Image 1 (tube, rainbow, N blue to C red):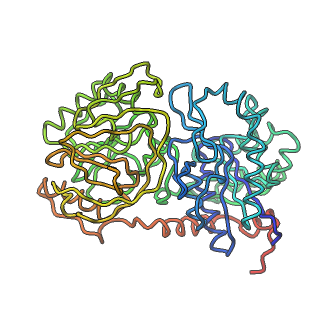
Image 2 (cartoon, helix red, strand yellow):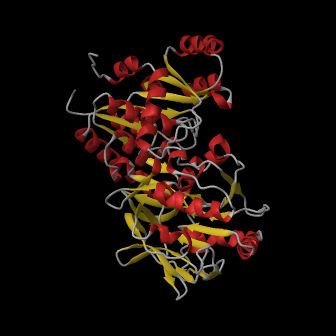
Length: 508
């Protein structure tokens, strides 16, 4: 191959057409075929993020794609990450570090004009260091009101000299109109860059679709490289909370153990919960603030981009009082990251960083701790040692669990808090006496299979249910999930044609 990496870019007719998943599949396919591959997305907007080994924060999709490619994730793979914080503002993260909170108008006026050089530099460096660059767009390239300052779709393709495959979601309907309409709204030089189409999320008889495919190719003069089936349980992390309502994996289900997850308005890194869906007998359901809790065995408060605003929402809807009442009725309560902060006595925001206008917001009061928000953010991969002695924690004494931290706010602990997860001198998780309520800053806690089984089996014993053993649990092997995804996509994608489009000469 040439010294400069070959490139391919996937853009979509809209958001949520499956670009991230298909880019993940391509990263693994190219790795399987012997190439050194890197993912890239110039600008990502997501609340599910990933922490690199250097402690930089990037979009979770690019972290997952790097993992599928078998290379370390790094900040230049996603130089700009936007994390919506309040209704009108987002935290702008540049090269893995927070830059500022900006409104959409300020971001377009103050930042985007100087972002092109940053994007170009990252692309050039990645093309120097890898064989193939798999690039993901965002939303649609035909947003006419935004195109003048767009850096993530056709501008990125131009900077990377990348052929573009346009992806459409047939499950939403209107697939041919969306593909043809998108092409019509592109400038002639942009339309020329589109090398073909991928139709995603197909279910049914492919022969019934053939007349439409023929029409599309004749109308546009561009080939359909593949029709990808709807992949329900692919086991690959998702980055956008829209999948909580659209993906059947996340639909409420019943089980021996009833796990109620509070669907916070600004829920983030909900992929923490994915392993719980793989344990037989687990019933996992999402509860919106204001909805009835029912009679769960355990309540989980997940991560959030804004702990203070979401805590206020729980009080306003009476969900906070319902959680406290459930706890006093012997229901276990767990908090992760922002949800962990909510378990404490109070959330303190003296500098107004969370945008509520209040310096002090009461927490749930289930843990003897308080959290204060000051400038700065903790982002790091971390390994913890289990230290607790109450409840199920004693079974895990001195075991190591790993994950990552992404949070603002620093917690201070009272005398009744028992540290259960520690990293050096840092307390990463605590429990209250009796162990029925616990929380942690450790994202990915349930990816640790021994930990998850010990916790679930403790809940099962309290219900008089038989324990689950390791063999009964669905695989948590991410490598196997990437290989399975690659095999499924390869089967339905014309890889020979794709390599030709990219200018890669293969002899196998």
